[in-house]
Image 1 (cartoon, one colour):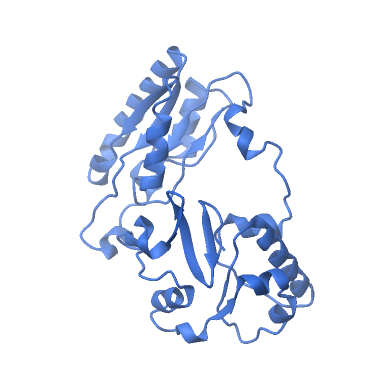
Image 2 (cartoon, rainbow, N blue to C red):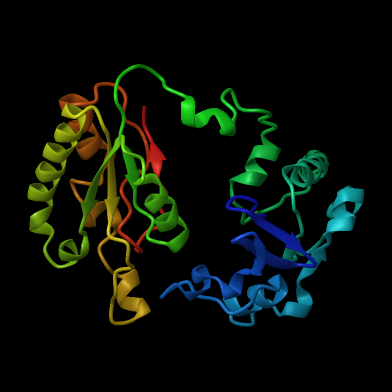
Amino acid sequence: LFLRADVSRDDSIHYLIVEGQPTPVHETEFARDSVFSYHHSYLPDYVAEKTQGQIPAAAVERFLLAELRAGTQTRLENLHHNPCVVVDAETQEDLDGFAADVLTAAQKGKRFLFRSAASLLTSLAKLGPQAVPATDMAQYRASNRPGVILIGSHVQKTTQQLQELLKDPTVFPIPIDIVPLRDRLDLAAALRQETLTKVQAALDLDKTPIIFTSRQELQFGDPEERLAAVPVAHLLEPLGRHDVFERDLAQAVLPDEVWGQPLGAGGLDEGCGQRAG
């Protein structure tokens, strides 16, 4: 149930649109993560891989696209003994219909546990159109005060978007090399102050600062070492924390106008860029 980032599903195969072409996700860079890698796009096989065979592929129930569009309420109500189910969907409207069936079944006492991106939540909450359409966000301004763009994700798709953004003559790039922080957390305070100084310089030039972390994944000896590594918020502390770095930005140069995700660690976190102002 992941529709963001140009993702679709058909016949229980998870696709990502890469350069306009549907690509099985196991062929993309996301499948090569040093800890969370996977080798299958056919979701029953993915489940079997991730559960190390505790849920065999043959035991995974599939809701195919045609069935989803015809309605799944009866089948949802007939699920028993906590089976694993994979659901095909291509559009938000597909999920709207599925969510309606889920809510009806839940009102009759059924309970469901989902692993999903935000698209399903949008349908379950019946959010409807947003106040500012996505196509108009580039022109949206909360006020005349300046903003800041924070980018932490290291993946190629984000890097391509960043490279395109940096072509804009009104922006001011502020790269942050987070690699030294992996072993020298004592450098964080100086790096924070250096970054704030650069932000002020950008604003003095009437430009939008773009703060972005290193474009490569941090490397560790093995997956266990990476999982045991200092969390991103601590790795960049106090640089990457809402209550320190963003507070300093707000008080020093961007009163009341800074919001967004903590800075990612170039691979330790699946953060995404957020725009303020």
